[in-house]
Amino acid sequence: MKKDIHPDNYRLVVFKDVSNDFMFLGKSTADTKETVVFDDGNEYPVVKLEISSESHPFFTGKVQFVDTAGRIDKFNNKYNKWKK
Image (cartoon, rainbow, N blue to C red; front, side, top):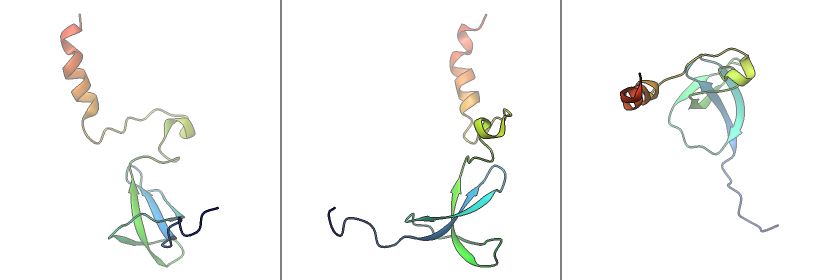
């Protein structure tokens, strides 16, 4: 293996699903300016996610629409002219 190609700044970070406030602890090199107090009482940098295993329909078994940017409305407006 090549030496010195892996980042040195691996650290514990909290990944937070913004759709349902689910948080889990993992390691990452992602830069972030925000911090959050995790369940263990320690403060960690936080990386915000739009979807995780707690909100994805494949893992939950139920369909829920997560539309943070109005993509569904944009699609409907674009293709509404072919609607009969």
